[in-house]
Amino acid sequence: MILPAYAALAVDFKDYIVVIEGPQSEESADAIIAEAKRVIPNKSIKYVINTHNHFDHSSGLRTFIAEGSTIITYQGNKAYYEKIFALPHTLNPDKQSQAEKKISIETMTDKKVLTDGNHVIELHRLQGSNHNDGLIVAYLPKEKILVEADAFNPPAQINAPPPNPVNANNTNLVENIERLKLDVETIVPIHYPADGRKVTIAELMRAVGKGEIALLP
Image: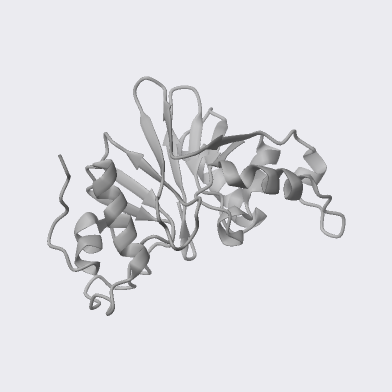
């Protein structure tokens, strides 16, 4: 699902749904939840994967808690999230204030794998990120899709010139893809380009001045 300037991905597992990212606000989270259940009916959202703790990527998480979902996030975020998600919302009560659901958080360090025996989501922490120390990307190996936030924000139009100098976050993402030997064809940026196009690995490689990606032996 694409919201203004933000995207989220719903993955259909055998008995439940996994949503990648709960950004912006309760309103945005409500829209993501409703759309996920529309396209994948009769299943609950078991997990919501949080790419990092910046407010615009975590401000919808309380709504997922009210939905009964478990948050998957970097281990360094757990204590902070438990504290802020337990705080009362009295001036403008949100759904979690009303539902008072138990906060459920699963953590990861460098890698975590979700699978139902058929679908697979690999979660990897980007090493050496300048943007966030706990920045997580999601990789779907069968589909060769990489979901990422803020490591590569594509330009509004595909024919925009590459940045000069090269963006360090873009370079870091390429270095991590090569280190992890991920076979990526499609990138789903949480900050989706304005024209809504399909973003390929070729765009990222062009942005860092490389013609192709090298998978190290």
